[in-house]
Image 1 (cartoon, rainbow, N blue to C red):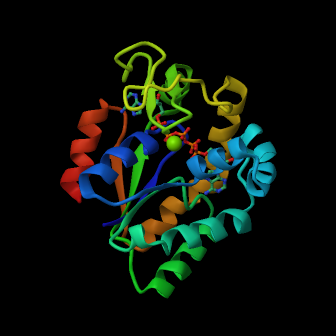
Image 2 (cartoon, rainbow, N blue to C red):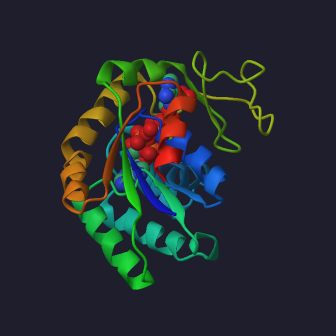
Length: 212
Ligand code: AP5
Ligand code: MG
């Protein structure tokens, strides 16, 4: 199972990637999560990525591609993976093609989760994340059992640093400009599947699972 999950910020890539990874026993590879962990730990990568992320801009292609190459070649990704948040530009997609060719494997599908802009904005205002284990909640649509506390690890939930309205608007604009062209890229390769993401989390999940 080798899948790319695409869609604008807030579409539910992370939410669905976690559920799919569990259902198909393959790792979720989320470049945003990898970068946030690096920022938190203050590694050289984190120092480089921080200012781009805070501004809602993409981290340079060459920085992110090297990380993904290494991650995809790890043992646990041998049987498959769910890529969440990569590729995000045409050069990243071309690099991914090269990496997969080196590995002698192919993508099974690119799932594009479609959600209108207005709905995206309201999702961010309610998102809460666990900095310990990466679990994601929504105060209304997917609340934790106990307010402010992660169901999975008991960690204290926080608002993501790039979830303020100004940065969110910027991230959506960057998506429209730099990532949306990938829809045609994967349509041409006959890998693209559009999914209506403006429905309850379980419904979206069942449809994607059924497709795979
Ligand atoms: P990244 O972490 O990938 O952020 P993003 O693409 O902006 O997407 P989000 O994680 O915000 O949204 P999501 O689609 O995962 O939605 P979620 O499931 O959380 O990237 C962050 C930054 O890192 C980038 O800005 C960039 O700087 C850098 N970066 C990362 N990858 C890069 C790359 N490849 N190249 C360059 N730079 C890169 O859901 C959102 C909310 O909605 C949650 O509260 C959730 O509970 C709720 N929700 C989910 N589904 C539903 C539903 N069906 N109905 C109702 N609510 C729902
Ligand atoms: Mg995410």
